[in-house]
Length: 248
Image 1 (cartoon, one colour):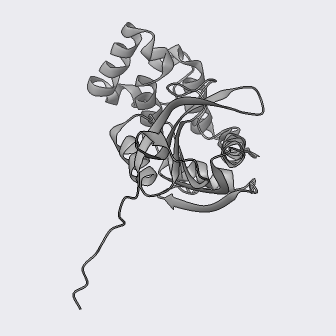
Image 2: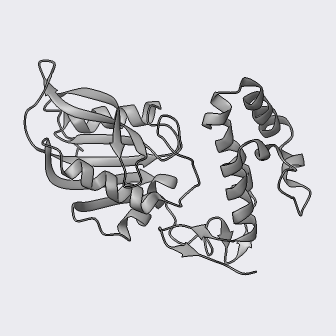
C-alpha cells in the first residue's frame, strides 16, 4: 500500500516575544521565548493551546527556533524556556533539582495568560524529557499532554548510574555544560581553560579516582562541581523534586 504522507499545512505566520521573564514561587525568573500565531505582522487575538519546552542547552539554538516557528504557524503558542541558571534565566543551575516546581510554575503561568486556552502540552528529549517526568510528579492542573523522548526518571538505575554503577560520562557532561555556563560566558580565560580540558585533556580529567573538590577545573563553578561530586557519591541527588539519598 502506497500512502503519500501529507504534513500539516501552516495557517499563520509567526511572531516571537523574546526573553519573557516568567516568575517562579521563589522569586527567580526564567527567560522564555514565546512564539505566537500571527497574521499581517500582528499576533492573532485568540486563545490557543500551548506547547512548552524547557531546556538547559539554549532556547535560541536553531532547532528550538525552528520548532517555535513550526508550531506557531500551525495554531499553537510555543514557549521555549532556558531552565534555571542557564543562559538568560536567573538563578543557579543544579541539574534536575528544581525542574518539578519550576516546570509546574511555568505551566500554570502560561495557562493564566489571555492568549491561552488552558491546555498546555510539553515536549523535549534527553534533559528536556527528564524535566517533563519531574514536572508530571506534581500534576499541574493545566498539563494536558507530554511528549517525552529519551528522558530518564530514575537516575540510580539508568543514566547517571546503571543499577548503581557510576557512568563516568556524566562527569564529562558536567564539564561540557560548564563551557556554556554563565561563569564561562563572563570569563574568557575560564572558558578557554574549560574548552582545552574538554578537547585536549579529557582523559586526565577523569583518570585519577578518587578525585576531591578543588582538584579539577570545575572548582571555578561551585554549583557544577557540587553536582559532579553529588553524582559521584550519590548523595542528595534530586530528580523529581523529592530528595533521594543513596548510601553506597
